[in-house]
Image (cartoon, rainbow, N blue to C red; front, side):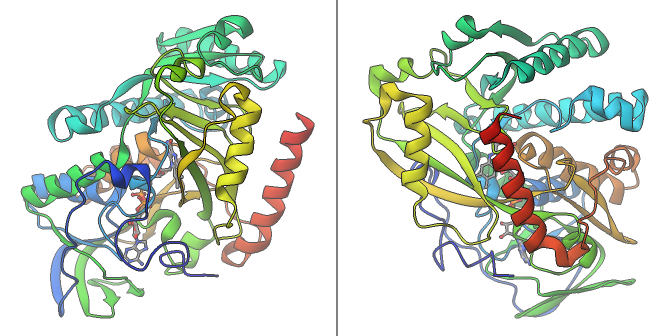
Length: 435
Ligand SMILES: Cc1cc2nc3c(=O)[nH]c(=O)nc-3n(C[C@H](O)[C@H](O)[C@H](O)COP(=O)(O)OP(=O)(O)OC[C@H]3O[C@@H](n4cnc5c(N)ncnc54)[C@H](O)[C@@H]3O)c2cc1C
């Protein structure tokens, strides 16, 4: 297994991206220097870890966030920015598997996650500019039938009336690609500039009393009371630990490695489209679709198309990210096939076998959340918050999240390589055959 914290990105600083070019990037914080004793240690300064730190600090604790690179360097600072509703499985699926009450409580947590994020943007990071609306395109007639039934179910059983169902012509008048058989527009979902949000969260957590050390990789954890967290420049002793390394986490725990798979996803930003932006999206909403390897896109504030469209499971980024993304853009939007990509970048996210997050205890007083499977912008903040609440003695929301069945790889922690390759080949084949 290669070192995902280093293999695909420059040795220092943030990876080059349109996001990094449109942010005031902070100077690095100093690494851990010697041994420390704290109430709560947190591994990873992305949305999950920083939200946990913020909640704990606001409650009067002094959490220590240990980050291998820089706060916001991981998936939280380079994603598609889509704040989705719900989970990667429908509420109908969750009801069948977990019962109506748990499914409803889980839906409530996701809605709370979206509200939390919108409040944070209002109060901490207006520059991350939340915009409402995500279109979801159906690539087959069967996908569209599912989509319609899910929207209807959310309206009748959950009172969620934010979703418009649109037949093909109507849908294509907004998302101007001939590929879709119809789709939905969810006005209760939205999109943001994620790097601006995660940088603001780091500042807010510190202002509330949290400490963040950077350039400090956790290399081993010794469970117990207290827990010991080992890094090259010191050992942290803590009563509680939150493991929030998500897709980037090296093999620190076999239980974790048996459930959360690292997957790479890639984004390209075109040159500014100017007036031609409306030829792609007639509204300033984001879009995703029913492909197994989802095509996701939105417009930037300077009228670029930010297009994410392919995944790779081999851990190392390919060297033709741009040409493949551009080919996919040309297929979906022939009208802008001539526009070059000014930026391309990739990142690593965590996915699980069921494509539902894994939120659990690794050992007494060691909490973890990850594997959001592409829904982490909305879910990771609330997951971090609920782990902090559990440490503060209110575990109800955490226990609800912990009921999500994330599944275990057939070969456990040793299945990451083979299972990834097989799974990827299978899903790519299904997409090609339209299954
Ligand atoms: C290209 C791309 C597009 C995406 N698009 C979307 C989208 O549009 N919508 C959506 O909902 N989700 C999307 N996601 C997923 C989303 O970004 C993640 O689910 C979310 O950011 C997870 O946040 P996190 O804090 O758990 O993990 P991260 O943001 O990855 O943070 C983990 C941090 O832990 C650190 N770390 C790991 N191991 C160690 C260690 N041993 N010691 C110290 N530090 C460590 C890493 O350096 C990293 O900074 C996308 C992801 C990618 C990569």
